[in-house]
Image (cartoon, rainbow, N blue to C red):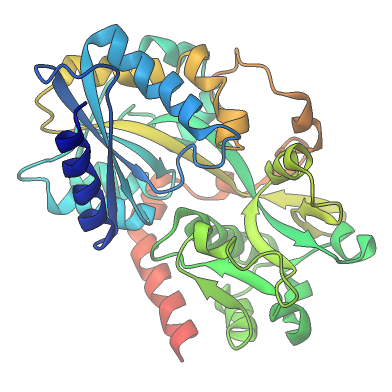
Length: 363
């Protein structure tokens, strides 16, 4: 790649960042005749890896070399923004694949008709419950997952051993909690559904009551990335995140007083699983290559990167977990609240729930 090409890419990245996009071209050799495969994803994909460039080369560079293709990775801040971009571009799609739509964005994506059905051969290694909970029609294919939990630092073991939503009805503790905006971010959206299903189906109470009690105090950030920009700190000892985070804490060190906890109630643990998927965009001009990449993304070669680059559980059951994942919190032994709602209910109610949440938080 000559200096002029590099300059064009840098300028393009700067311009796109200004509107919430960043585009990166992974190219193993400067052969301009290669087909370009454009992939939309979220801003933090593989960005937490110990060696980001090595992971990107392993995932994207190796595919480029094997299939003689150029990959244009477009990072979009916020998964809801990514979804809405795909919907707006439906008549003239600009992407071939999308990585990172979750089980809560799946119903809207499917209803909008922006994804194509495909059953990659490597799907046989993905547990059936992940496929069922994300998309049984195979328009979105699971590649990683984790329960939503609340990370903590510098708090008593007694408090977190029985953590509940009601814990944060104490204003002093609510002020220390950081949550992501569910109208923008998939982590925040998963947490909203975690709370809604717990209140409506376990407590049989109005889910709005909890948000009304904490709204004056909690810190709402746009995305998961921005939440971790303020956690941990003197004023924020809790953040909504993932059960796999203790593996990250252990790997990198420097978090001796940090951990994560799910919601407890009457001696039981309750979790909500966030499942993230990869899908082929309806209208792609490179269907065969897109199918090959989707299958590649489920391969052991790529999936083995997920634990220590995404700090999530890989969807491929053939992939072993690093030793640091012994401290991760899985959904095993818990009541998984995803079982209380189906995709039809989500499609019918999700927009209203988000609007009601926005009304509470702005009042």
